[in-house]
Image 1 (cartoon, rainbow, N blue to C red):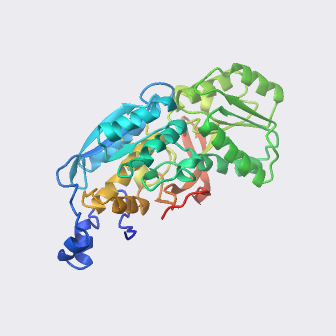
Image 2: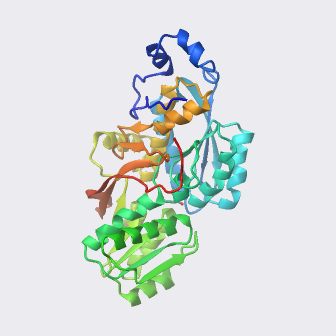
Image 3: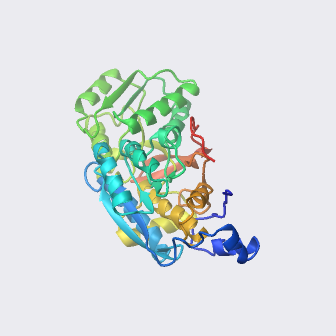
Length: 409
Ligand code: PHB
């Protein structure tokens, strides 16, 4: 199967469809010769998309935002993908790894979905790969979960990420803290794959830029939000800076507790995800927090301004990185489906089309799929000012996950 990269941007447009591709390549007669399965699965058959996301628990807002972003992009396509109507089936993953295999199997074998969009939680994603490996015809589009292995040693032809790897989410902040002259650093996060890998990547970046080992690394069980004893310890350690990963309800609680413990004005706080979709709830406690992320609410590009406006119109809320990742997950599917004229019958062609995705008009800025199926994208340095993540600079351009053991393409 030839690797085809007809996919070029994230907007409704006049795509290079399967039909015109074949015509250009030698007339429609060639279609029957070279692609006997053309339109085997397409036409008016609904495209089934399973949304396996947390709709309860500490990550509930993340799941809701991803779903809203996904639906927004779908609506921009007239709720049809590659000309086909779309059937959405939602399942609450509860961010519970122990329930992941059962939930994914119900969507794949039970409902016969063409795509699974999910999950949020790295542990849930790793468990899901066991189902996805046995179901090569079903595409997994990850709208958040950053577990490094998903696009390294656990990579697969049918697994694609529309978000980030945990390594990407942590690494850029390391050099930034060295640049700012912080020598005694404490890290703190939840004790599971996302937290551990984001902080590990931060430490890698920090040490590579000339920083020393952190003076303390604090781990809290997921989804525990009892932070008080740890904050007392941080106050006693008197570090130059604190770097954390918390998200959703945990991020709201941590930032408020950090300010409540009197640390906000004495020890600068840095983070990944700690100010995403939480700023309203955190209020002034979040002011001044610096983070790196592959998007920002204040990103001043036509694509982002249009996205923020459209998202507010349908939800009355400010968009978040999670909403953007849901939006781009739908954009990824929309492009591939347009390119294939809705035909999902040839799995090798479908995976090759998704693998060749180039997103030129995303709210995050241009990005493209790496050979391991992970976004190559810019990371921005942001600071919370007046309840917004204000972009200070581009921290790293076109950051690619280092990869590791994955052989695709
Ligand atoms: C993850 O579990 O991979 C995860 C969850 C929430 C985030 C980022 C990563 O905000």
